[in-house]
Image (cartoon, rainbow, N blue to C red; front, side):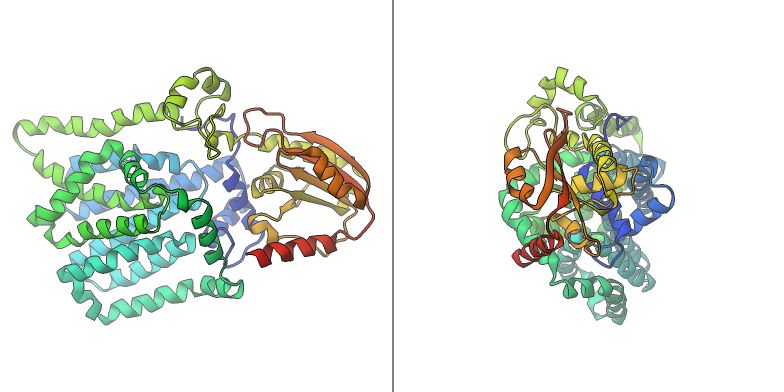
Length: 487
């Protein structure tokens, strides 16, 4: 219901899937956990169903953890149903249709908060060790989980739970967590900490444009149908005696959001905060609406998230054909969904346009590859990671497309001498590429291009260069060195 088969995968998904072919303890783009999942997907057949299964699984597990949290707080059946409904009909449905680290990131935050809840309730040190393992796995999925600890540290100091810092088990658990993430830290060290370059680049090109007011506004939109439940949790954590032990959670969300605001983080980085608060709010509302005429408000409370989700469902998911969206563009334009990062309105939302044209690109590259002489000595060089990943995913020829973009810069095979080059360029000056590259080959042609006008890659051009006059590996090595030195 959420995804139309007319769309391909999104560009980031291809990169994450390709990491299965280059397993290591770290990547320029993400930590290694996603590559392990990709390897499992590859072993099981690499189908679209499997690719979409895992983020959906992480979303289902998030609902399960919220359910268990409500049970730990002695919530009744109404609380359980309300909590599950609020988590389901939220931004998580959009997040969990994409094979990206964000799905598991939200699950990691929820589980880590749950281990804190269990430790507070039982005072059993085993939950500190479980929490350390959960943090380590979450860290190996996405470094974003560090913000949870940044918000939690001062919150513990403000409550009676500051005594935790005198518990030796906390530090043994921390050592366990450090041991689990150490291989990734070692990889970062051996590769000159590309994460810092990535963060610097992100800050200069994207985060600098983040409006803090918009960040806070979008926090409300992510769980718009659950705001009553979330704000109820804040009240309950502050004033409800039955939840007094868990007041640390109230301060935690404040400090975590302040940290996100200080670093000008993207709004969706904070989504993982909220599921646990839905658990607290559901339990509180179940107590408020337990008796008398208030009982009749229970179905309304459950219906609210669903009712708010209906209009979102109509525009926020790629469940309509591109033609339908173009014919009914009014509502999309009214909500600003047609505006891309270039500040201009386009035919489709940018995310949807990012799911088109990839299969077409791969099929055309396959066809060009088969027409070349000495095809086994052909380098396929792309402008961006989406192009390279899509070719490698859809190809029928077992091709290995690469790029100087993202992790692909480390995946060039320079042991082979290339005599042909298939060059995939983003839509720009065609003559410039021919003038720059043709002198190094005997033959040069503009072979094809992406013709799907709805695709973000529309107009991307495929060049074929045959009969290399030089060993092009030297130029590739120089380009790789330049790119890495620039970082």
